[in-house]
Image (cartoon, rainbow, N blue to C red; front, side, top):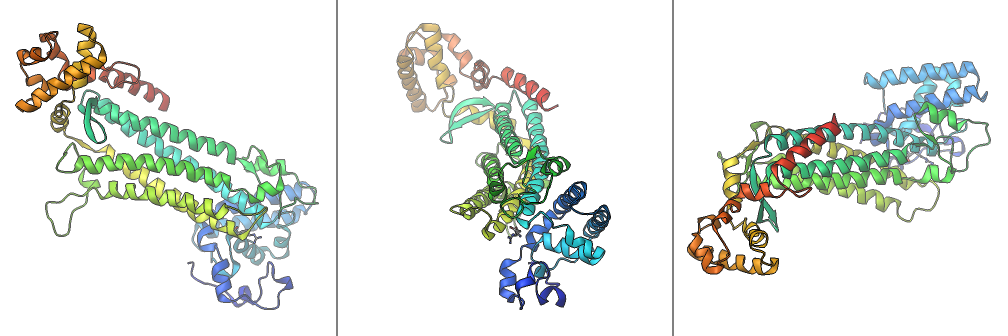
Amino acid sequence: MTKDNNTAKDRAANALWGGRFDGAPSSIMEAINASIGVDKRMAAQDLAGSTAHAAMLAAQGIISKDDEAAIQRGLKEIGKEIRDDRFTFSTALEDIHMNIEARLAELIGEAAGRLHTARSRNDQVATDLRLWLRDALGDIDALIISFQKTLLGLAEAEAETIMPGFTHLQSAQPVSFGHHMLAYVEMMGRDRGRFADARKRLNENPLGAAALAGTAYPIDRYMTAKALGFDAPMANSLDAVSSRDFALEFLGAASICAVHLSRLAEELVIWTSAGFAFVSLSDQFSTGSSIMPQKRNPDAAELVRAKSGRIVGDLNTLLMVMKGLPLAYSKDMQEDKEPVFDAYDALCLSLSAMTGMMADLGINRDALAAAAGVAYSTATDLADWLVREADVPFREAHHITGQIVKLAEGKGLTLSELSLADMQAVSPKLDETVFSVLTPAASAASRISYGGTAPDNVKTQVKLWKEKLS
Ligand code: ARG
């Protein structure tokens, strides 16, 4: 919680709403009511909203030009104080809106009291959070792009690197390491799309909805919308102050993105373990053990995996806060910011950590190639050879291949180590050309269907993505 810097004056009776009160709130009331510890992160947005509102009030003749000038001067000064860390945040003043307005009164006197004309904290806070989130979405987009570029670099360098592809975490068919990286590039591309979509819908202006019903003053909501970079004013004042679906959409998109990251994080945990040894993390992104000197732990990957749980928790928090709330504003909604900020922080850190880990990932090509060849991973290729070269129906080819796998297993050999005679004992239709499809590299290279894992496909996709991201 923010340090309580309340002055006697702040406490006496809230100067901003205390007209009908004789006494000050209990310290418990104050503690549960205050949000300044969280919402001070929106100071810049709150100042921007007030700047636009004051300019509009003056343009509409609702306040005088002189008062506007004083307000603008005061807001600028407050902005400087906050940036220089000279601003004293007070819990008694509850939230960022009242902290700034109270300071404005100290700086410019009576004119400060005119700023809140035709506005309420209800439309003010909705405006601030939309502005904050709009900036946050820009940060996230940039982080995802740099993550995608890192994955593309790996995909390009490792297009020809063959690894086992898995289903059920059992070796299934050989794939290109680059192809595996590109799978995440695609996921991140859709994540960017979801954030961009959320941004489009959130970019409408609640300011001027006032407490809930609009206002009798001749305000110009198009003017403030334009000044704040919104596409339009929100059309319904009740909706404007009481909707938080824009924040839920952000948290939904963040949850999906975090879940995507958690899957690659989990793969890093598996791939760096001694049983796999597919890849290694650099010193920069590994940690040691305080007791076992040999250990190199993938803590960052594990924490990315865990942070996805935290981000999904943030989504659930806000969904539950909003569930069943009658229109319009309820104080419950003050609890919207903490999950939004928390998810943003966790997601930015997760994206940065994943980018860092992948940027200098060590690739153990030998281990990948060896693992790609075990567990009869080219059995499907053998069946496909029978279909293609000997016109055997796929179901029958599947059965023949199963018998050959059983034979190899009994002899402790891989498929390509079996003799042609052994194979022909199962099916005389096989000839020596079958060996050309039994290596993992040949298997991967043959998968040239659109979207398939052939290294040539991977190189084409890398090129397309590079153009898309340049
Ligand atoms: N701090 C409040 C919030 O974040 C601002 C709005 C308060 N409105 C009110 N009617 N008390 O939601």
